[in-house]
Length: 498
Image 1 (cartoon, rainbow, N blue to C red):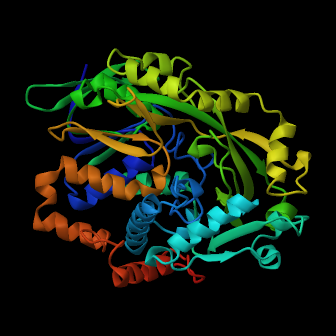
Image 2 (image 1 turned 120 degrees about the horizontal axis):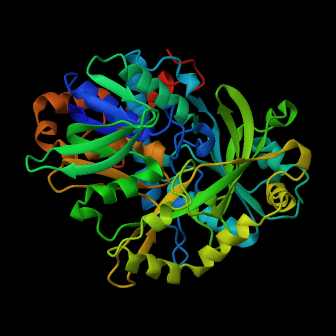
Image 3 (image 1 turned 180 degrees about the horizontal axis):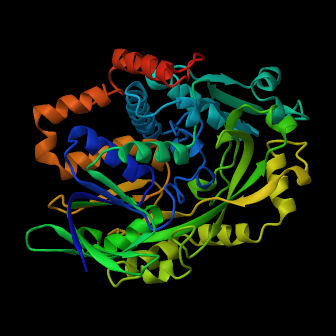
């Protein structure tokens, strides 16, 4: 068994690890970084273009980020946070394009109008309240609203086709929304990292064990999937960015901070159309309202997508129940994650979410006709033979302990880190990849605290992310300044990227 000593070990070759590796390599090019991936290619799980919505989640169209309160008001706090976080991602990607690290921005990000669409009197009233709450804030000042059928036919002709003129409808739109190919973005960042002599990528390698030694360093046993040989990597810092696989690895680490955490896995499927005649008639992402009891990842939306350079339309996702934590994982993943410390929260969540479980089981038995009928709520003339079903990625929602109910199910993302800052992991799902830069900056602030407080790292971070240390939520002029730059650099303002 051989040993290798490194400064940083990144587990998983997805957008989170690629982002963290890129940030750290720019903050300190001398850091010895190793990225280990179980599969044979980069970005094959959650970051793969078909395994996520491709939406640059900014809260523009996602109605689940603005829940209606019991008093009828609409809560916008989460939408504001997500929007500001996505602006951080745009700033970093813009800087990478300026530096030549990411070439041809249109290969991974493209302008796609973000729209919300609802029908029915109550839903129209909700969307109107949502618009009134959001558009007054400078983060959402470009949002438009209409209940006029003629206006909506101009905004979304495919969706309004054959719509009953007496049906109450409403929509909002933001023109500077985005479609992001996170798989392509990840591969581009990893390709750039491979140019650094202090970086190494190990594909087809599986983490066998993680153990922290008395000196605070981690000894991580890694198995080569081809030769079955193992070796130990001695790492000063470990990041578990393995998507649904992060929780089992976090449990292997044994850090006390993981106690009580569990995972609720959900799978998904898309209906996909590549007929050019249909695709060219819809150029936006249209999000609707989720069914009662549905998880946020199953909010229905009809999306214009560009996947590996090819235009397509996707509808869904159709969520379903699963026991796998990864698309290419094991059916035993859920059962293997059961521990004495998380059994109570898991059972409490199962008890309190019977409606969700019934919904997911029902989704698993949907027929193609039933899925097409759901699509026809958005596109009345959809033909069965033009849409095919494809698997989306797995998502593992967070379960954690709760004194009041014993356990609670959370639908966001969360960073779990060791008290000494030597190990961190990202758990959860949406908005996920869209806020990767903000999340990885937080990892650096937690786990490299002393160095992050240095003038050198502060300056470097502000170069990469001009708004670093300031609030886009509060500073109108700063938002306008960085948004002008990012939209121009990434070709999202109607002009070509530089």
